[in-house]
Amino acid sequence: MAVLSKPELLNQISDAILDNGWNLWYASTAHPFRFIVSKNNELHKIIVYIYNISHGGNTRDPEEYRIQIKLRDEKLEFDDGWKTLILGWWDEGKVFAGFDAPKHPYPKYSSSLQIRLPTLRNAEINGLSVSQKENDEIAVAFTSDLFMTYVSELNKVHDLASTEADIQILSEIVQKSDEESLDAGILIEKVTKPRREVVRSIHTKLRESNFRKRVLVAYENRCAFCGVQLGLVEAAHVLPVSYESSTDETSNGIALCVLHHKAFDSSFITFDTDYKITHNKHKAEHFRQNKLDGGMERFLADIRTHISLPPSIKDRPNREYVETANKIRGWK
Image 1: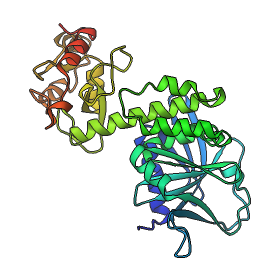
Image 2 (image 1 turned 45 degrees about the vertical axis):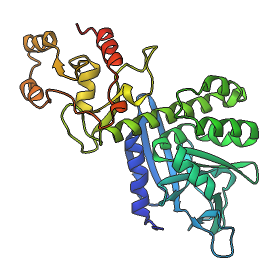
Image 3 (image 1 turned 180 degrees about the vertical axis):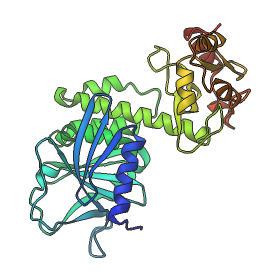
Image 4 (image 1 turned 120 degrees about the horizontal axis):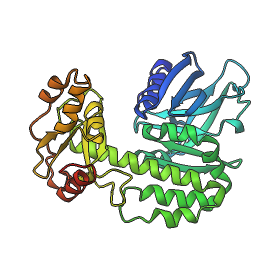
């Protein structure tokens, strides 16, 4: 099992933040790391202690894994306006683990915090998993897709520890988050009211993450309009998320680079039921008349005549969805 250095662990965190679509500033790259992250009107200042997750040793339960906290000072840093995180990184499954920092304000120089292997494995498979620990605490394991959901909902997530029934409902939702048939609303309504929103938020993020992974895998992380990769490709919905009949099926998705995603959503380019790409000539003329057509010739030349399609027919854009999407976006 790989043991990452502190700079490598720093990269895991920063990559997760940026991949979640957040802006990132480094307040300190010395451990504990300090970040300022923002997106839209939301901003968080976070202090992060992070350690490798490893097995406890030959004399330990084979399913008992842990992080080993080693501090030069005698206590964790808790500053006004900052959130303090204690994280572990399990490199084998590419999973983070989060522990309730306020419950460990004065760790000994070499204190260990445990998490069970099944919890890590479940997070690797389903995106998130929680397990109850002693002293009214839960350990939360999650993939990088949920990093900022964990940060945003930090206190509420760990507050789940006080209600075992809520943890069980969350676990059921997580295990079925990729099923179209799941009536998540019914399950979420069973969660105690103060914790309902955080469970709903986690479920929504898991659905988004599952959709994104499936679509990007289907298109081999390439833009269907131009073929670019470079980590610039996103999963776009054919039928917009806000449309009542929109779904998270792979066939309602298409992989687009950030530029073509924006152009698609703004109805400057689209594709038809034969998968032929076209552009909006009225908009193009508007750009010309208003001297906003810089780069348009190159932009249009770089687009394929037809979108590239996934090998599997079931993953290709559903023609009914394409027809409806073009209609509601004003294409004739």
